[in-house]
Amino acid sequence: MNAVKQIQRKLDDLAKYRAQIAALGEEQERRIRLLLPKKLNAQIADIKGEIAEEIQAQELLAGKLGLEIKDLVLVHGETVQAAELEAVWQKGRETWDATALRGYAKANPEILEFRKTGNSSVAIRKLKEA
Image 1 (cartoon, rainbow, N blue to C red):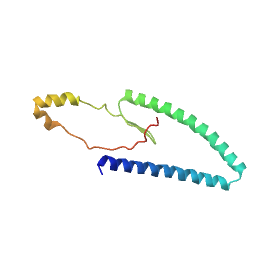
Image 2: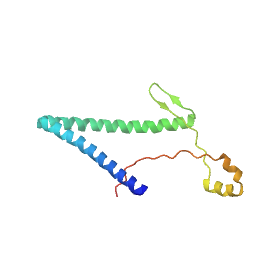
Image 3: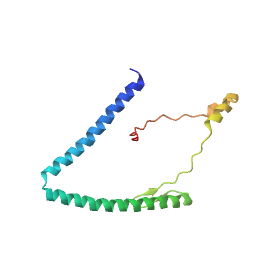
Image 4: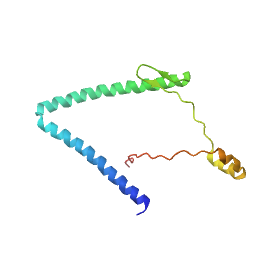
């Protein structure tokens, strides 16, 4: 079996595991709801709804404040630490036009001794639904 097919099969297996985990979580919630009286389930749903609105409002405020902090730190130009959090400032990364440099290296191969290649990495992401 070629590598692509093997990886695809494993990705499909991983997707199945993730779906099973989600289904088990839903089944757990369903069984717990069945044990509780309907009135209590309704009260729980109300509380979750009320708190969800508060959480959403706090997340909006936190998001706005986070952007404001980032803007301030960019202007400040240094990492800032507080009691529980820090805003880490990083100098802009220097990049080079790799295509142009490869062309230059053909005529000037001595430049290749300064080239470094980092390790490859893999991120597994859920495909966007069409």
